[in-house]
Structure formats: structure tokens, C-alpha cells
Image (cartoon, rainbow, N blue to C red; front, side, top):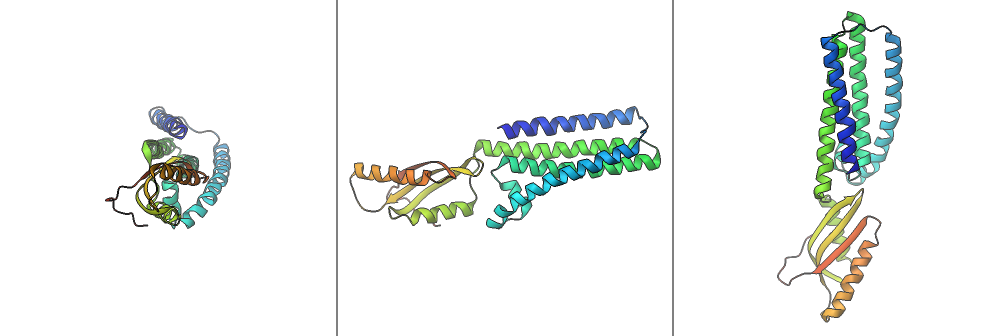
Length: 232
């Protein structure tokens, strides 16, 4: 939720300010006075944003390799909203700084503030696009994003390896936090015990699953005899 609000406030407000500044510059052009200061500020900003961007890249690479995804796909799919926001913000910032530098250079060469103003508008549109994507992605997680099918298959295999579990007929893994899921499923336990003993075994299995640091909670029910088994 906070990541959604940050995307809404930071990027949309930044986009609105940048576009407004560009339009005002087009309507009331003002000549620049000191281009060197502008270049120094842009270069320093590029360096700092680049360092932050590389850190987010290094953080995303191990998970991307584990799930056999490319870097961009992993950032788009990750349940960590902070990583996604930092990666998108820094990528947009680096591209925006390049656009700003081109606009400033064109301003210096031509003596017209129009390229600088157009650059400001382009940066604002870029921020608006990134904001729209981040808002929509965080909305999807708030509504309930299911885990990757490969993770689901791995969980089914892990459940079937439990001596208590004969088969799995239903499983839903939903992200409830960064790299944290809730587990809801139907299982058929081994043996043919009384209801009270089965309830105890089922609760013990839930507790064992919930003990994992990536599981926020587990709720299991008994499978009906006619329910088809899930394949891992």
C-alpha cells in the first residue's frame, strides 16, 4: 500500500511538475545563463542514480537466475515492491537525465529554450508512464497476486514428499508481502483415522508449513474422494 502511495505521489507529482515547467518554458522562454552548472548537476545526479541502479540490479540478479528469468522480467514479477520501485525510479531517472542533457546541449547550441522545454515535457511523460505501471502493479498485488506456476509446482512436490500427505487436490499461493505467501489447499492424508485424529494431523501439517520464513500462514482442508489430484 505504501509503495502504491509512493508511486502515486512521487512519480505523478514529479511528472506534473516537469510537464508544467516545460509548457511554461515554451510559453515564456527564458535564456539560460550558466550551462556549466547545469552539466555538473546532471553529471553528479547521473553518477548517484547509477550507483543506486546498479545496487538494485545486483539485488535482482540472483532471483532472476533462480527462476530462469531475464532481469526485466524478474523486476516486473517480483513481490518486493521496494526493489521494483527503486529499479524503475533509477532507470527513469537515468533516462531522464540523458534527455535533460540533450535538451540543455541543444539549448546551448541553438540559443533557443525550446529543446530544453521539450526535454522537460518528455521527462514528465516518462515519469507518468513509470508511475502508471507501478501503480497498476502494486494494485494487482493488493488485490491478490498468485505465485509463479513454477513455485506452485515446487510446493506441490514438497507437500507430496510429506509422509502425511497422500495427494493434493487444491492449492493457492497468494503473495501477502515481499517474498511472503499464504498457503490455502486441500490434501488427502494417508491412513483412515477418526475425525479427531485427522484434525490433529492436519493442524500439525499446517504448523509445519507455516514455520517456513516465506509462509505467512497455511490453511488446509481435507480433499473429497472424487476430487482430482494436482500434478506437480
